[in-house]
Image (cartoon, helix red, strand yellow):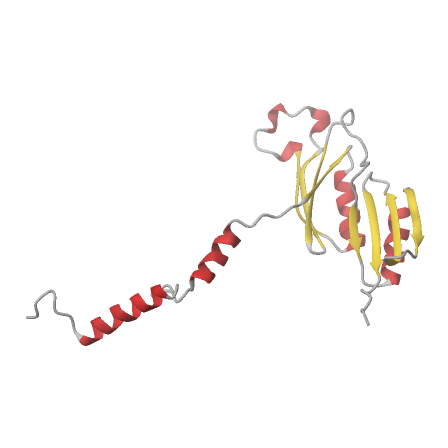
Length: 186
């Protein structure tokens, strides 16, 4: 029987390797470097900024329109009447959207209906939608222009091949842009 302080060559080598790895910032059992651990910690603390829109009773119609015509995907749609403990919701608010969420492009868009007396159309905030082609920019502007307030008609600008600004029939303000390719310095 070996004395407890005596270790085999294999055990000694494993312990030495673990100490060397830790000294280099590598976790001996997972192989993760300290940099990997820092990245994992950053991911755990990662923040995302989302857009949340208030509507005056037409949130569902707006989200269904955007889903159909802009390629979004509704991932959540709950009315006031569907929430837990909905017995206290006034009957005229049961169909109002409590929470809606959709994936649109590379972001999530959220929204809900607010009481009409509190609703104000967007004034200083825009959803900025970047597209890759002139044809797509023109298609989207034509689609969103129906019943819209046009702030800047579709046109070419110094920074865009096509650019337009409008407030659609649902009260959402949009900037649609087909950006110019960056200029190469010669």
